[in-house]
Structure formats: structure tokens, C-alpha cells
Length: 366
Image (cartoon, rainbow, N blue to C red; front, side, top):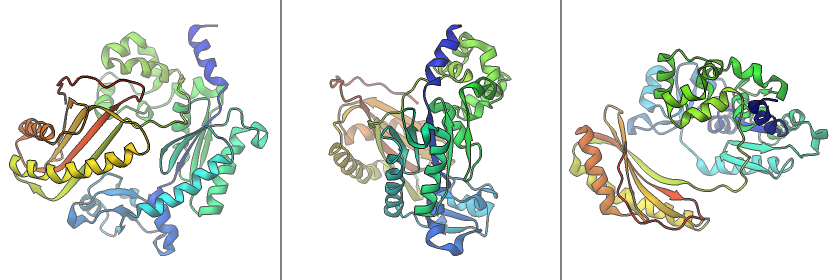
């Protein structure tokens, strides 16, 4: 048996389900108001306040509307778009019920967000141990109790399960058995790989890499040459290999607060003034997070988005929030664009909880 085959066989014993709710926020709003069904709907801020789309239904997506799009642009694409404000408490209550349903089938659950989770059902005795039937039952229970739909992916590992859950959306399910992995990944488009963003996708296009089969053909050394440390993961994914376990103990790695302004901040001085209020909100969120988990900061992060939507991020090492430090970062980040700003974000990145606090070493990057 080859080394790659031996590695892949480690994942064959696993039965992983990825559950992904279908346009969750919008689905809940349509459930609450049936008159919205069949009409293009976006949940988010108002266009006259520079709101963005938090979620939208499939009718809106047919017009090119998508999440994170400015609501004003969404209306340009779909003038008949209906909007609804974000009701986070409602979505959290629905999510709580959904996660309770997960617990009926397994204790090994890794929540990714309110509407998405991995489940390891490798040792589950439900449905005679059939992950396919378990996923079907979970989706049915969600629909019966909440009147909204979910899609599911069933596979030997997390990478493939997540890919599969998006395969037959909405209200669908795809199963990838261990015997099907090799043929499935060979034709899998590279854009389906988590972590392949616009920059990486462009580079892959330039190199003629369209499928995971192309990545495998380039080889691990070639992928490392062009994509650095990410190349190793790309090579494993190209062979359908992913050893990551379903993590039941979620560890916060970062925390951030962002503010998008109704009017562009015209200069650096106005940006520095806004940091005062954003910083206070960051402290409030940090205090709440520390009630649930021991958090040791390793760096401070600042993000600026200019009026042309170009975004720059900068960070420096630090063990605690520091308003003066954020203002220094803001000054340096603003110099990169020197034009009006539409968004400022302040954040923290944390060390794993078992790591000691480190001495601060200043380090900037984009």
C-alpha cells in the first residue's frame, strides 16, 4: 500500500456530516412572514445607511445579490428587492433548537456558526450506524420543528463533507463514500476548496490549475513553490485527504469590532476620533468573551476600508487592548491609501489557552 493510500485510509473510518442551513436568516424571516416567500429578500442594513446584505434568499441570488454586498448595490441589481432588518435574538433561538437536534444523534459536534456545524457520527448507533440516514433524519427533524430547510454533506472527512453539503442546495444532500473519493476529487474545481480566495484562484488560473486533479499532477513540491505552506494542504485536499477531527471544544482565536460609516471619514483626524468609540465597544465584547474562556492576546489588529472598497489590514504584537497603539496602527494604515474611509475595524488575536503570555514584539504586515 502506498503512503498516500495509507494516509487516506485513516479517514475512511470516519463518518462526518456537515449540516448547512439554507439561506438561514432569510429562511427564518420567510417563515415568520409567509408573504415574503417567492420574492427576492435580503436581510441586513438599509441602503441609505450603507448597510450590507447579511443574508439573502435564492430568489435574490438569481439577480446576483449575495451576502456582504452593500445593500445599495443589491438594489441596483434587484430594484424589487425586499429588505428585513437583522433579528439576531430570533436567529439564535432557532439555532439553539437546531443544535439540540444535533445532540440527539451525536455528542461530537463542532459548531461553525449559528447555521452550520460538523457532526462526527462514526460511532453513532442511530439508523443502524448509517450516516446517510442520520443526515436525512436530522434534516427532517429541523424541517418539522422549525419549518426551514437544511442541506447536508456526508463524507469520510470534514473537507469533503463541507464540499458535499453545497452540492445539492437547497434542501438537498450528497454522500461521498470512501470508494468514491478518488474519482470525486479528481474533477473537483479548485474554487470549491476552502481557503482558495480571489488572489489564490487568480494564481491558479494563471498556472492552468482548474481541478484538484491538476493540483495533484503539479505535485507537493510544485504546489509549495507557488503557494508556500498552503501548498501542502492543497496537495492533501487534491487527494481527498483531511485528518482534522471534529472539534467539540471551540477555542476563540480572535475577536473584532467593525463600524461602517453612513458618510466617509474624509481624513486621518476623523478616523482617529472614531477609534475612541469603536475601542470602547471592543472592550465590552472582550469582557463578555472572557467570561466564557481564558483569553491571552498576542496581537492587535486594525482594518481600514477606503471609499473605493480597497481594504488594508495591519497588526502589531500586544498582550492587551491599547487605544494609543490602535491609533498608531490607524495612522500607518491610512498612509497606505490617503483617501476617505468607509469602515474601521479593531481586533485582537489570541494565543492558545495553554501558551504563556509573550513579550510584545512590534510586527506589521498587510
